[in-house]
Image (cartoon, rainbow, N blue to C red; front, side, top):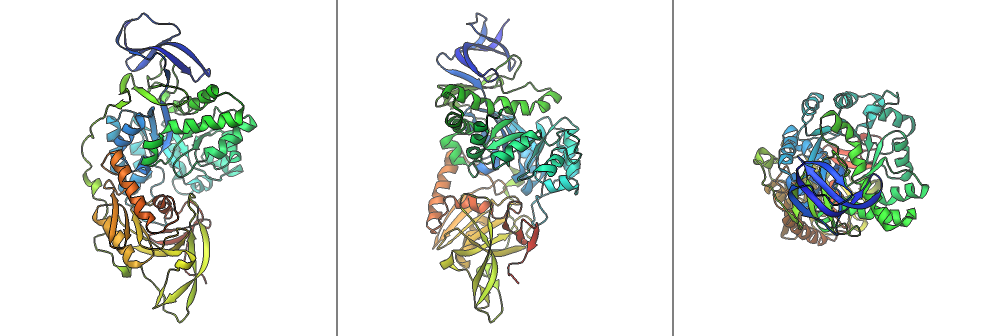
Length: 591
């Protein structure tokens, strides 16, 4: 027997048996041909000496929005692979809200050139709600058209849990269309429990068959365990914005729960954290520390268990997709599995020197084999269509009354949280308009429709940002990604917003006569540049934002969720304020 590649002399991490042993790994045609416990004498086209190193299955991220990194799919892959990631399962929900099927096509195109396996989930809810205007829609017919693609693993997170539970619209039909093709259906069910959870998991049938198969929205250990007991695989999130792992894993470990049905995901990860701290490897390190602290096990066993949650467990979760569509299994170093491997210098640091994807060395001595971007971005670079320059008058809230104060609904933002509060605050009135109140940390917020040049926009008020001067604007505003602006004065708001329009989408800070920006020309969401340039520009932007006096550590991240009307409690879209709890529009003024 001859093989294409042999990894000789390494310590193999067996995530199935939870042990380490010495041996060789034989690879042929991109698959693991054999794993020997002693040195092999078989000839190979190429031999890689990994003596003194550890060989693990390549890391898998089972739920990820690449757009949150501000990087293109290919640039994200070039960065993630250097940290041992060999497969990601991506929900291109953000770009789909801007560009629909064309945005998804970009991801499928760049996936073909990537040094890792990128599988795509068809976004299930575009638009997410009827309270906002998006750049595109994905109908049931569109979803059915996209699902058969061999790189499409299934239906991405079904956010419309009320539609599933109460049989509203086409939600159940979307799930059935993926399930009946042998694909995977990801869930999104924050706080769903009891009878509603049973209906959600079974796609409304309550017959014990799990059709919506995962959830990544659990915030507590109790919620995660209930979803696992209902038959879901639970992805525990550790992203840049939300780190549920710190709460959920200690709970599970201290109770002695079996971790087989739990996996690790990043969901949303910014470019700086990706470059400086890693991708899935950073989650594994954190999980390992929790297992040691709360599980009374040694460092090596904790590391192996954490690696299993980032390799074996997601590999098993997607096995339905692999089986139905002729893909080899992944996530373990066993005969017949795909040869996606990472070579680590040590189990302690998890630093990666070599990565093999489908039998091909794509990272050697820490150097990534970079791939060229296929094709071009076409119309995706011209996505901001607010043609008329905005003026200060567009951000005035008129109110013709002799009253000196008026009670208004104010969005209560909190740094580090995606949820907001509904605050009722008496705001000053003068010159026929409602004013901000810096003394009480209340400034203006506006969302401008930027996809179809309708001119539709809404202006409201937000507290909790601590800004004292200037304005901040961005086209990253989940989920519809309209142009969102916050500011202390109307002139600065217009200045920041117009600059974002001029650069074709992105982020900007206006303070005094200075403007700093980060262009995001791909649908106003992603850069065409490399990770180093994006991180440098983002750091410069954050420094400029600090000059506004904001108390937020990451104002752009916080800002991006203030227009998301599916996370409680009060949000604003281009159509106005939304009470998320009541799930209905509400007026600015309180009767």
